[in-house]
Image 1 (cartoon, rainbow, N blue to C red):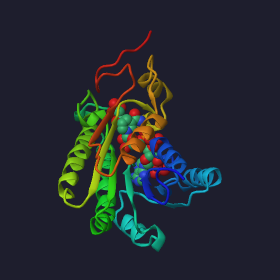
Image 2 (cartoon, protein in one colour):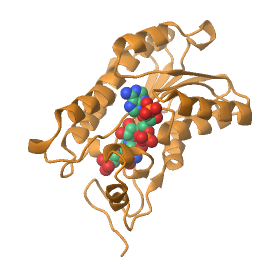
Image 3 (tube, helix red, strand yellow):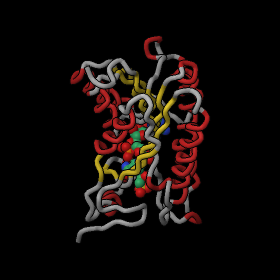
Image 4 (cartoon, protein in one colour):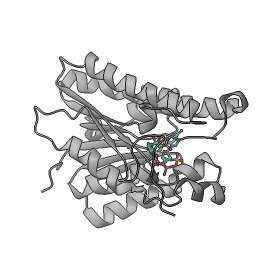
Length: 257
Ligand code: NDP
Ligand code: 8X3
């Protein structure tokens, strides 16, 4: 029996990185998982490995959080035993590009805004009502240090994470009388596919991000998310800001030569 036995945990963006690490860690605590992402082959692989290793129930399906109709039909089609979501982890997100604002690509901006802000809103809007009705539940958003402090060329990505920060605070206010917890876990540099996506697979640019630094791992972040999810009933972790020991803020880090 784990600390989350019989709980249903819905994780968006579970095909890699932090979402995948959360899925693995939460399964180890006995949670049954709803996992979604766009790359179904990768997602199926994650789901199968968890089923085999832990024996928890896993429901996995393709979902692009940018598409409201797709999110709506996926959530309304959940089988009865999966309808009661206890914990929602809004993790799906990305950075695309690294440019001065006056040179930024509109497509990159649209993708980040549609995924990181609107996607989080769509999923939350459709999952929260049943939590409100039951007067029970927990929403955990994955924000970023970039949602607290901007850095050069981080402009629109940072703006989306500032929005996540604002939404976390707003949702907490809106459900204050509903016995629902709302938390955000806000990491600094984590070694995942994040930089590969941001730099469209340019290895040289990716390596530069982590040069001389031991970045956080996806498992480090999952550990903080699990901490939020396993506090006593009366305790809400509002916010965790977590960085590698050599990173002090969005802009300050110590790189070993
Ligand atoms: P990864 O690229 O490894 O994982 C991102 C996940 O999001 C993937 O599973 C991807 O799945 C999913 N995703 C992206 N777009 C969509 C979409 N439109 N619909 C559904 N799923 C989507 O990076 P991380 O694990 O690092 O990123 C997870 C979260 O952590 C993001 O919100 C990111 O902003 C945040 N973060 C990351 C940091 C880092 O340094 N790595 C630091 C701070 C915050 P698929 O492509 O299969 O759809
Ligand atoms: C990801 C961390 O510093 O690359 O949110 O923006 S950072």
